[in-house]
Image 1 (cartoon, rainbow, N blue to C red):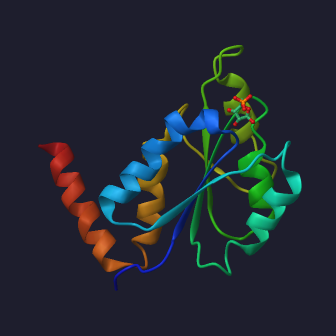
Image 2 (cartoon, rainbow, N blue to C red):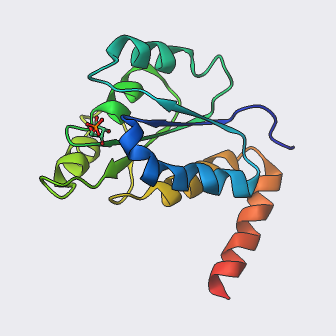
Image 3 (cartoon, protein in one colour):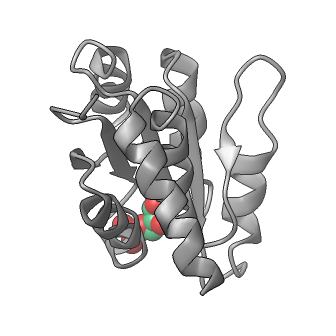
Length: 153
Ligand code: RP5
């Protein structure tokens, strides 16, 4: 089964996050996974964020990667509106070194999970997204096996 249409949404809280978050989209591109990219802020664009999260499943999105810095509520807010798995990427910050982002994303209350990556872990977010998709799409499972072999080499 080959993936057609946009399966992953890469979302970020600000255009300033793109320098990190493009590592996720680049990896998805390399793997041949179709994705869309959105800049959405839980604080500055709360209505648009809600609308995105509520409509994502109907658009065919199967995994959401959400990166944000500082009081990084974006992944958690998105997760509150959807049953699609959400992978959070805490972005490193100047003032508090990213601990602010990390704590905002990692400590979700019971019932609303977000898979929290390492600081700036956008590439791992893409790999985890592909691993989730690979449960359904055999061609991705095969590509992941090849990727593992390359890592060893
Ligand atoms: C967060 O605030 C964004 O995710 C970004 O990491 C941080 C700073 O945003 P800008 O002030 O650079 O737009 O919402």
